[in-house]
Amino acid sequence: YRKAADQGYAPAQVNLGSMYFEGQGVPRDLQTALKWYLKAASQSYASAQFNLGMLYEQNGSPLQDFQEALRWYGKAADQGYAPAQLNLGSMYFEGQGVARDFQEALKWYREAADQGYAPAQFNLGAIYAEGHKGISKDPLMAYVWFSRSALLGDEDAQRAREKISARLTAEQKMQAQQLLKTVSRDR
Image (cartoon, rainbow, N blue to C red; front, side, top):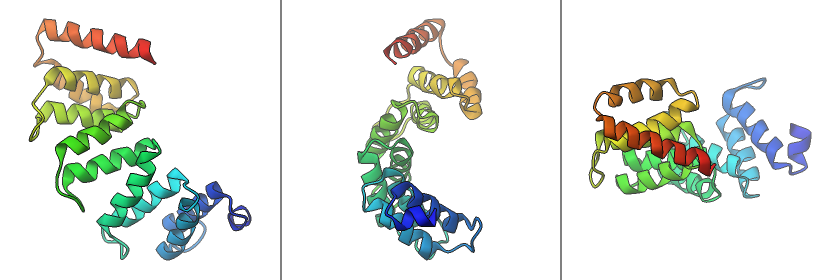
């Protein structure tokens, strides 16, 4: 990885940074991980930008800086990188480094969910199941999003779907099945 990273190959720079971040084969060194992630991120490499967001968001890290995490997640999210969109949505949902904003969280979760990213689909289901300021409870949509996530193997989504299914009428279940079929054809 180092030889390719030294030649400016962004994927190798990210992998090398991750080895330092995790302490795999080298002592854990967040500053060295940061250096390699920054090199790849400067090439607009989305996974490096995402990793920088995670590095800055990490609790207990001497580098923890929610504003920087938001900035880097935002760069990767704007490139359509679903894990960054999910984490950006979570920061808005939790109010980390930014005012709590459920609509903005919903927007970013939806961006990632529409790409078939199961964790984002689960989070959308949870938002609709619980309802939040400015977002009404919608058990039908919760069931749809939990179902989409469950179809991708998310076990928590499977349990949540079963739980919310008990609250749906027969008509709502038929509507949900129709929505799920429509989405399957669109992909």
